[in-house]
Length: 147
Image (cartoon, rainbow, N blue to C red; front, side, top):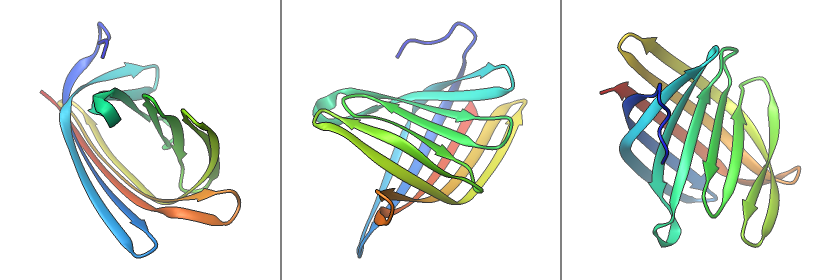
């Protein structure tokens, strides 16, 4: 991952819980990343190992109006926008084609401090393929802090 000159090194911990039908999965990712302020927004960037050990660059944008944007760039690409009052659509790009996803954010909370830089983000959302087909319910818990 290419680092920005004005970036702040951060530790990143992301917990993900996925519920699909009656199947439940949990994942934990911990890594080093970088935080960058651009205008009124903060960006948290880090990398995950994807399929076949291909790196996935993850960027989380904390906006000044309270929404969260999650972008994942690797073999598969997606950008999800979380806002508790909006239903949003995004494209999930795979090597086999593009799938349109609808995201309904049920809960969103952000706790953020600049000095020292740290934050917690909790998101509970549901993804749909098409208008009514639920793909699953997801919970994300992100913690980051300056190192």
